[in-house]
Amino acid sequence: MKRFSLLAAIALLCAFIANSAMAITAGEILTKTKAAEAGLKDMKTEMVITSADKGNVADMGDGYSDILKLQKAVISYKGPDKFRMDGFAQGIKASFIQNGYKKLVLASMVRKTEDLKNKPGKRFDSLDFGFLSSRLWMDNTVTVVSTDKQGIVLLKLVPKAPDVGKRHDKVWLNPKNLQVIKREKYRGSGEMRVRYTYTDFQNLTAKLPIATTSTMYNNSGEKLGTVTYKNLQRNVGLVDSLFSLTQR
Image (tube, rainbow, N blue to C red):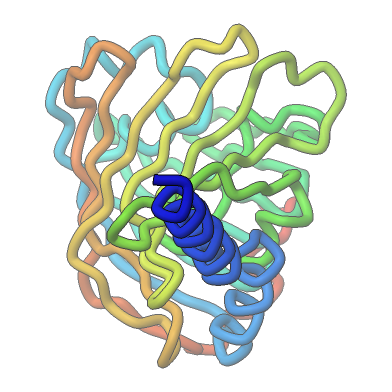
């Protein structure tokens, strides 16, 4: 009996060591992401938004309501931190530009700029548009929480900003191909704000996928809307002036 117990203990120890050796770290995912995104300079795509319930969108706050109030839009991205959306909301043309930590909103008679350096809840990042980027590690402390039997990794992202409270993101991804499967965003109170599920992947580079369908849900599980991309273009030569905050 003692011999059996000793052999069992050794087997368990070996299994633990093997699993530990196979476990991927946040640093290793970052290294893989940097290599995958190296060939991506910019991206442009047409976005169509189907909102399930306008009432569910109303209390989502800046950022998400900006996206979901649009019926359709053109999305432009230039690495590492420039985003632009040009579309129509209730028949009015609107543009949302984020350049680094600065944001500009242009709509009809509205021109509003805002510094989002310490407002991570209002900022866009690559996950809002369906892909992983190394910039996420610059703006967040990223840790691996767990890895399931299928190899899917759960990451926790905590913003590097003061007074974030319990604000964080949970991100599920496949580290083999860098497909982001699901994301949950949590408010400073600890309450879940929004959940994304990602499907229908295309490649931005040979090893960097983007989800061309994203569905969002609120903390009650109610569907907020579905975002789909078409006519995805990579490395089209977007100029910096497209993301300028001085335009009108």
